[in-house]
Image (tube, rainbow, N blue to C red):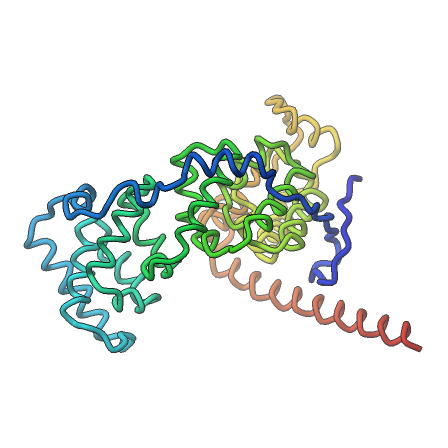
Length: 355
């Protein structure tokens, strides 16, 4: 059976997993210069104006805004998480966010997790939103993007944002999806070396076609940030232990989940009798997108990993959520024990080598 191989100083907690070599490719200088010319000066091409900011600040009935604001402010005060802030400015920021039609619970959650957002003056928020508009970002993007990358409100990281957009453009990812990739994973902007991102992309090309890699990046943007050994461990497990090939992986967000989560979902379905390792004929048929495969009753990968605990337990395994949660706890302990055994084995090998 096909296996990936790699050399790394990091130990994967699952013994069955193998790793990939990470090819050290940089961004081709000609491509970089070409795309940089396209984006050059974009951030400053649309100067800040109050009219520009109102492009996405549609009118909301004042009564509704006041009611939602009161709810958010009251809940924030009850959390005791608010830093020393300018109260009036903080209230203006919250109302500014409400003008973009975010649900009050969304705003409450993001500010509770990132109270530093209220420390930025209102004029900085307006300037930043207008700059994001100049890149094409719209209402749904502003809050998650700024909550995930506060430095944009500081006025930094704009060059990094431009470089990431250049890179995603070079992969022929459509503009709307490029913006979504960055919004769903703002940590991309904080990567100071796009060569590292390129290396992780090239690592995907060892297993997937360019089109498949593009789809995977849109589906699971974290793979451009995650350690290569972590991504390869997931690919290896899905490939070798579940018998699933590249085509079906692109139909799910499997690489957006942790390895422990993937193992737990697979093992639960397998032990419940609703998933079994397909034979080579079934694997080949799936990869060729043949629809007449009747010998396998396995649920698709997306149904296994991209569903809620309730849908997963009830729909496929005919069990309760409580039973699934008990299994999750058991698997956590089992994987922890495996990790400790691997660590002890490594230490023993190290001691024997030094003698």
